[in-house]
Length: 183
Figure 1 (cartoon, rainbow, N blue to C red):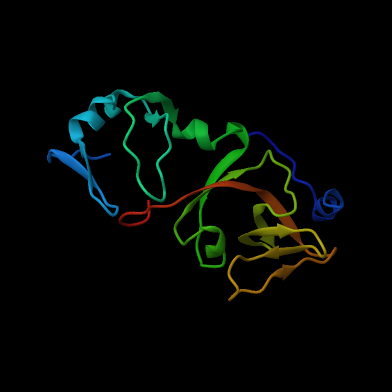
Figure 2: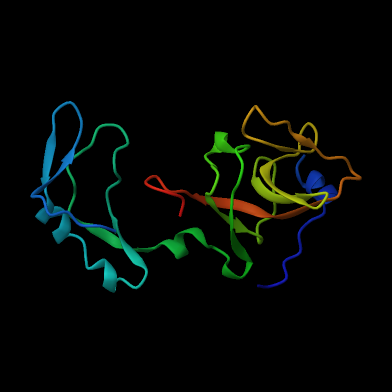
């Protein structure tokens, strides 16, 4: 990892003015059931084992509301690492614990992607050390300098000019499991 210098807290305040299916159809639920032949879906997907870390990225987005018919066109191969790591020499992963950031979608055991090459700005989610204790919080620079949780059950950490605070990087992505246990 390269040596990336992080701004002092006083400088920050100045900057702020895989599985398959054996059934014949995949079922999507909405008011009327929509059946898609598995052969249609699987024919559009290359062998994931030979993709060398890349996963198919379909050209159409998936509706979060009502599903639409699946398109059979793969736009490109997506390497998840390339998606989430913009500065490899300055990026690290860390696992979250606690519930102080659930309001922004960070849950216990999530993996946070942290980029040390980015300058922390007002509103960014950051990894910081406050008096030697590591924390993930939202950096607030106005009207006062603080590290704000995203859960009303936790108080903000108000930062005085004399506070011993070091910003380690900006959280750019959160990875969490939707099925089963934490990854």
